[in-house]
Length: 285
Image (cartoon, rainbow, N blue to C red; front, top):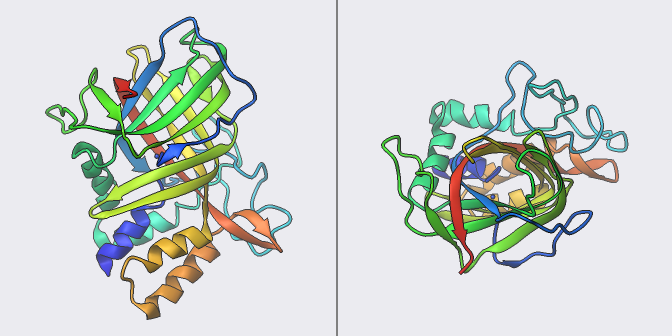
């Protein structure tokens, strides 16, 4: 059962999945330069410390949405002073790690990346200027292949991985790049997650992405969005959790929900995950 709970916590974020998704965004972009890609080499659950968390103001309000009196939520600020950051993973991860050990969930994610189970490519199309550009397309895809690792156990820069035949491309067109930082508006992002022997596609609703482009071509940033209560409960029900504990799990998921209110109750909970990506190449097959 403990292993099932670890997997449930690890599902609370990770990134793309099967088929081609409709592009989202304000406009299509043209490019005068080749596309630039990064392959995620490190990813971790974002947990607020001292009220500070990476992420986005997903509901564009402070605290629970006004129309959702039953929601329980605390907003945070990010390290640049932006307010209203939504991240309800903050109460989940420490509770799980009290049982499995500090850092265990992030270690499971890192192991999945290093062994090739969780390979995610981030591609910037229409990038005419690597610092400032008013129209960039962000593409997120799952990849496949045997990754090359450095002595630190992380993926090496400069390698080429193929788009997974089962991948569904998530695309946001018309993102704005300012001073080397790209941000998207909300879009739908399907996240394939592989933790231990569990494989799921997690739907991130109203997803927002921030990508910082560094001088060496590497990237860092954050994925954020809302996870459906019903989807998480459905996933949990398939993890061999005893039926008497399942009702407690379902209640907890609903208690932390802070997004998408329906009839005064929130139907999704916010989540953020931070990442680093090395410069790489994505073979579209």
